[in-house]
Image (tube, rainbow, N blue to C red; front, side, top):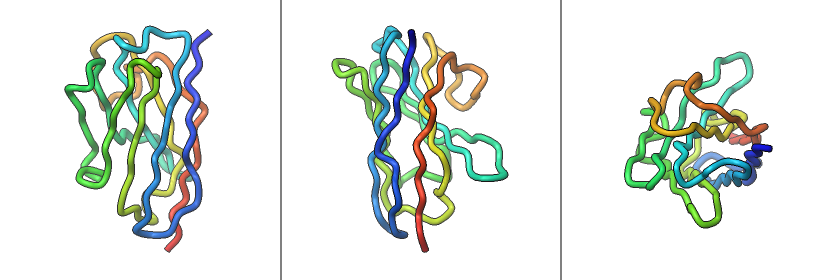
Length: 124
């Protein structure tokens, strides 16, 4: 059974930082493309960041580029998203996703598995 379990969300003030984690089980994590998406109330789910199996290739949405860093630990089967200089517009539920093999980072439809999400709220 595949499980992606996100953690690390919470309430933070503008300018603060959070580190999201996603622990994976039931998949071949070391060969999976991993991604982070977010969904704010009333909006569609949007891509945030992605990372290839080796960690050597990463990609960021323009909205978080320069403020966020994605990384992975293939021993711990965990992917991380460090978010700095948070803004109220970053408020959303953040989802971890996993894809078997090579896919286009930004397309939600390419991911095979999804976590249940963790809430990030940035107060102004």
